Length: 126
Image (cartoon, rainbow, N blue to C red; front, side):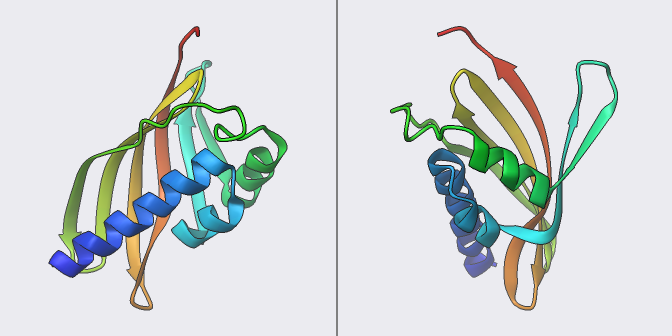
């Protein structure tokens, strides 16, 4: 199990780096090709964003790194429900947006990857 914890932590670090750098290659290492992102919109309805659409959005915006933004990545918790299923709660930021993410990970073909991301965003004034 300790090796699985380390492997999940490594995936989460790749996610943090990819998000901060705006690097969809790194994000592609962390997120399974079939992954989706979910959030509750301001209208109270669920939003479902496929990975490819999210990558387009990431590529079209300036990265936090390019803006010189500080990093504040944090793994809050990792919970394993079996040998191939885990959920991680993490916090990260792309100022002025601050995220709490719930990342569901699957171990497929011996490799951990994020299969879904449900998140909440708070926007703060600088």
